[in-house]
Length: 282
Length: 249
Image (cartoon, rainbow over all chains, first blue to last red; front, side, top):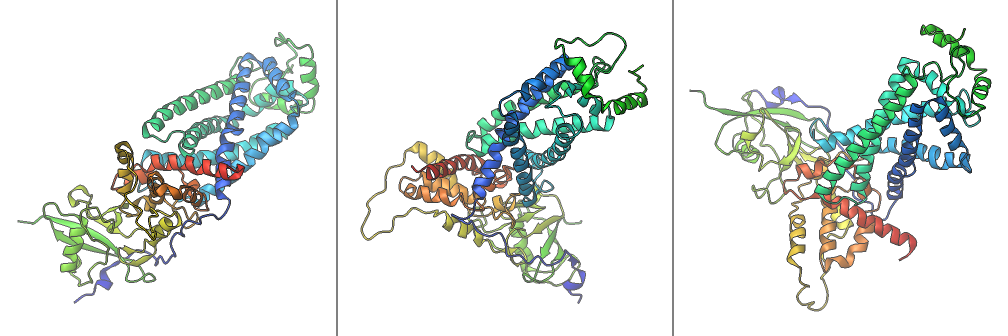
């Protein structure tokens, strides 16, 4: 008689493992780290995201209004300290600790394809998009090119130039949606995990609120992106146009400053516009 | 006339370090059969669908009515109780595997003692031992009973832990079942004397903070324990306890 051994299908290497270790009561600081990660995502990072999206919305009023907003933000007391303590350091912590959380999770939506489990996975992927995007965004927009703290009125042109690249535009659109998703679901998670919404009905209702918030923020953010790529300010943002009507300028120093500031970046800007078939400079 | 049959594929492993193999079985269909009854039939006639003689499949089971928590296994990939997994409701071939997150003993039998260790770590009991008769316990209002009774239904099957993406060897997460028992015993008028100790225990490494709120636990729980509600409210209790400890109450 044939033996079972010969017909059985191999199912992989033996899985000898010690199993999951029991709770380490009274040990470690992971509770503090995890709660801090969660809190930092709401305040200051969530609060900063709101501020940033609202400030971006000023771009719809044009380069001058946008520049004024950038100038206002850079005129806050101790602004460099605020920037590091409430933006950069929390971003680094939330980003890297978040990646650490992701690496230690074992997503299993293949076998458990339920809404909560999908959201668990999506929260990790949107977080990854956020880390990568914000990394390049901070480096390119804050620490490279025209220094906006010193030349706030160059802000519109700088962003406009960045978004003139269709690949970069796509990156901004994807990242905007991912980050708004990550933030709004993050609020929902915060409420659930800090015991603010302990009831199933409370979580369901708060879910609608968070979904509405996320959708609203994404629309707000995408509208701001449109201000930089749409036709309305196409030939005004850089302030380098010599012919035709000047952009409406309330601040007397705007054009001069923008022109002076953009001195170094100017040839690049012009050549780019030429390659895209639009010649702004006579 | 061809009789109706049921196809099974069972993942087998003779010992913790033996190679795992799949064996397929074909059984005559019977009304109301479930995975445990099928395993019993296989034990009665351990012959694979290829006609090969094999050994009876090792598995845990006891009550056969979803009340003892023994027969948890992965059926078509998903953690559930074999006794309440009706064959008529399952896609065939029915793939039966051991729980993946616990040390394997043999075939479908795993060592789930981590749950017992976790329950001990949070002191999931009511301390009534003493040298004299303590008399009757305090009264519990019906409204409180309504809240606590579902939590007391836990059968320690560990399905919530198996299905949890955070319960793994990297996190050492305690799992939903233990958190629900903390809630139960903290709500008990005598058991709550240990409330602070339980909450502090849950803030240790692998504690309640590791929950990622994927909510698989509440979906797979065969006893429909409101595990996510419990994790949410116990999280708040743990946080408040840690703040009190930090500031000095």
